[in-house]
Length: 514
Image (tube, rainbow, N blue to C red):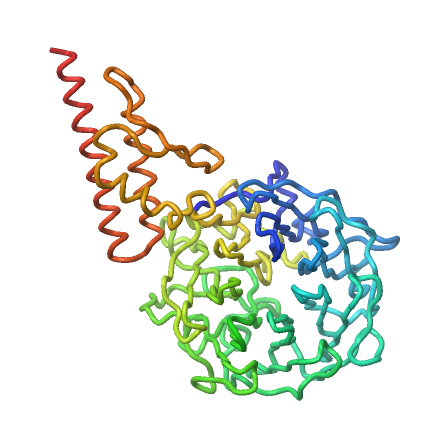
């Protein structure tokens, strides 16, 4: 795996947080990521900005600025999706000054893969609008949005690539689906079913539509008696936060559809005294739910009590593999300083269990660095109420806030298989490990991740030493992605190959000196 920087700023005022990422379901090389981009972190002034990639996340480019309508001072809370013909959409929350008064719900559209954005379309106007989310049908391109307006959950859809919007049935934009909602997340399964999960007090609730948003089921409690972060953590100026940290945190649900009628809903839960990710799963499109009525713990491995997992995001690859990424905070720094990593758990059995837990970040980051003040409050900081995650056949792509550059920037993780897809070159890896490092041939990986077959060098050619090391390193990294006993054995063989190469070169150097 490889951490890749998404945004590049030299001005600490341009802190980035609360991100979203969307991958084109019909071309996995094309991605768009968006987030808040601050202009004055101390007074909580910001707008949204996006970046795009056309090479699978290996490199990123800033989009043109998002236009604002007259009277708007900024936009917030990005949610991104693609349609079936390659247009990108962003659902946003515009606001005005003074007082950051919410205007309503707006939709942006890009027809050039996120390079530029057209003028926004305000589809609903209410000062109570908040916590919006967006999803699309990958086959029809129909667009769906859900958000809160006070405690009411509102809904809108477009069946013509964003040209016009309406509610459920023949209703106008903003159909009220329930009246006890907080932070709905909307998803569209491969079969076209629409799933919405949301928080209601100490319960997770769920509604669904099987007719393209014309009608919705009655709300069902799918997890009861959860312990939200707000109900269990210390509170400063009405915001919950972890002990030893000042940034605000909330329990927000995340959901996805997997293979067939699989549905997974996850959230952060404090029932153990430390924040852990819990989830529920359904194998029949959300009609019935499996496991404990209060949810099952996502990660079953032992976790230190002083580590907290929060801000989960869950998505499915096209083959049904499900991945959940989340922040992990704990005393990882010098003197017990609270630092954050990004962790990921993966399920290969439709959510029956999650294994392969791994830390994605190259190193933990410090949430106190370049931290905006939440709504200008000097006692509460901000790293975002969520971060982005999407998936393609190549793997999972989280986009998170990171301060390794001393500025809040966005980073992602490019799965190593994008750079070196080891399963396609399995025979080459075996060839490397069992003979090639002895004669100097093998493969060379250039800076763009392209693989070149290299023949053995002749006597006196200085190239073999470099080829031997490169091929052994490539094999070591590729084998590490296998996460199996065989992979570990192959890594051992690769290291032994490098040792053999070094010993051989030392012998040559000694002979030259003699």
